Length: 511
Image (cartoon, rainbow, N blue to C red; front, side):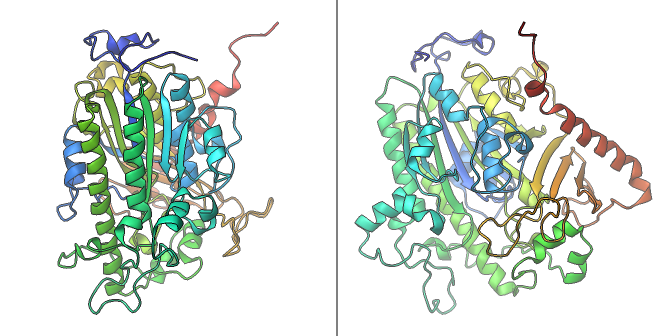
């Protein structure tokens, strides 16, 4: 076990600290905010003039704001495990939600714990089994758990706290006012804001932050909010914040458009009770609630950042704000994620460390697997060989000549999604696939201009992101773009061949 302290250390990555002052060379803490299902365009700093995110906008102004960050899977668990291991989904093998992580590679929290950090987690982890003991076994010293899903309520520290504290504990935390207020938000919450999972997560994060501040060790604190994930239950006053705002709604699509998409995408959109024909008034309330959730999260995160400042720890803390994927919000006729459209795979990513990370807008292609090696390098901790991401630490530290920009980003998903609880009967059957899709393992490659989505046996999609940013014109079958399709398939093949290279090629003979 290493014996690093907050004020000084001896590390392997001396290159980054070579020109730093003794104070700057101290090992930083890490405060990692994870939102769930947060769209890239729902942040003022990313160009949305309507949404109110003043605290995050101020953070973005002193952060590396990555505007072309991409997740490795547009679904919670595979994406989160990629964040925490620096490995692609087909390598870490968590391809659907609530499946156990059984690979030998350590997660981010263990690597920081072994490097001398005290580690903690508050809120949604999405691990299986969904217990505090299991979360601790992955490397967290302290865990306060709430996955925000009714099936996991028996394991939730939030639910236990609310049962002991809320006079209205018999009312479910997702309950909405019935009947809805005349002309008001139909998603208005019954329970008071104080007793919601969002407020609980923020308060417990503040408590753990104060506790860790009393330690002589740096900390790694993972603060994970369930919102703005659906359902869109939202308390006062946030339910009415955007009542007078004209929020642009996505283009309405019909069944003819959906039927034109490759079968795996079509199955995703049309499963269950497809909402593509939703009334525009109902959709507007969902957007108002989603925007209200983001503003609420902005306020809660702002209070935590203010406390970090009050404790005198801002200058020695790396702050990350991001999400596990976006939300279609009825773009292309779909709510949620699970597809490769931009609203699902492109995400906000802010990384801040005063005087060490150069603020600015970074348009380089980065992947979420890149975050782990970047943080380890910034903290001068060793990067395991198993990590498949590429550190962007030289880029944000001002050493651009030591950074090679990526040519492409990659994502993968099981499509249509396996519904492991069986509600919709979408099971994977070996040799048969899912719901008529024989090979549901879909892959995506994205460059600065092009995106290719490959569905084995069902063709694909090719979008020109420069000239068709809303991805309305599928050019996959256009003879004029055969060369582009071939080139992108080559990139996809090369990635699949080389991603596990470090795992599969031995360094030396053992005899």
